[in-house]
Amino acid sequence: MSLNHSEKLERLERILELTHEGWWEWDVEKNTTFHSPGWFKMLGLGPSQESSYKFWLEHVHPDDRAHTHQQQQTLIRQDKPWEIEFRMKHAKG
Image (cartoon, rainbow, N blue to C red; front, side):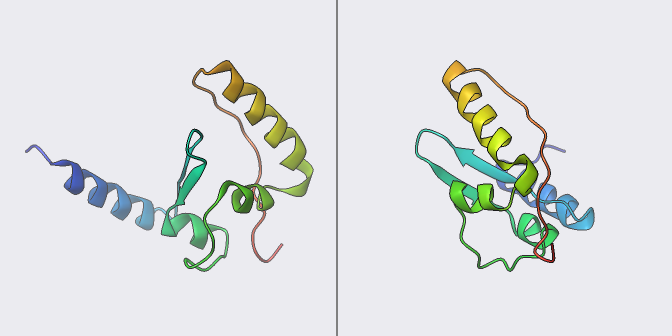
C-alpha cells in the first residue's frame, strides 16, 4: 500500500499523539517556525500560544539557553546539517 503525502502526515501526527511527542520546525532563511500541537502539550502550554524562534528560545531551560542559542548561530553559519541537545522548561517549572 502506497500512501500519499497527506496520509503520511496524518499517520505521523497520530503516532506523535499516541506517544505524547511533539515536534517543531524552524525555517532559518524566512525566520518562521511551526510547533505541533503535541509540542505545546508536552510543555504544558496551550495550542494557541505564539510560534516563533524567540518563543521557542524562551522555553529552552535557562541553564541551556545561552549555549544553545550560540551553538545554533555557529552551526547555521557553517551551512551544514546539525544536531544539538538541550533541555526545555515545562510551563509548571
